[in-house]
Length: 217
Ligand code: ZN
Image 1 (cartoon, rainbow, N blue to C red):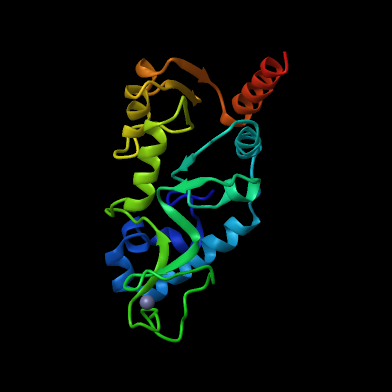
Image 2: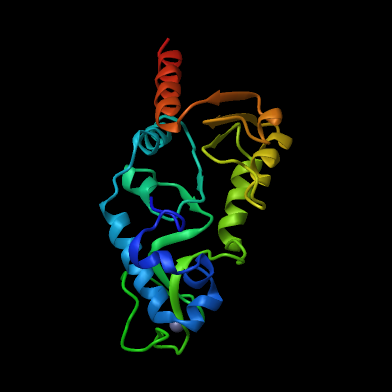
């Protein structure tokens, strides 16, 4: 997925704080709406990778799986995962800041700028911007899942940004086995029961094949 740093052309001249903060949105809603329209267009073309598919497959094999993600691209759902907790929202949704009505109609209404809901509230992309708190409901659901799981897989994260970084240790404190999957060791590694070093798209399918072989014995 293109990040702020990797964008070429048009968007290069803008700073992340102009495009992905509440202040930036208020200052120039047309600019922020155009940026999100373009990102959505790019993301719609992207397909899930082997890691996404492996996690969807795993959900079908175990009694309960909660997938906690910091991604906003909706690719886990696209791969077939059903129980997804989105800590940073979802780029395919808009939300009214006043009545909290969520809309999957992707383009922000452009007749009024800033875009307005029928209730008079501001409509914005339903994502967590820089400097914003995580949505309480999603974080509570993630904490509950972490505190009650048998196994916690931490996949492809440097595990340093709080509060999301507290989830693996929360799971561990409640007796879960903590398994880290990442391309390199992280600050979480010393606490992990197992560290599987490599890309998620390789490690996860392998892990699931191994589990299935175990279970079928
Ligand atoms: Zn509203």
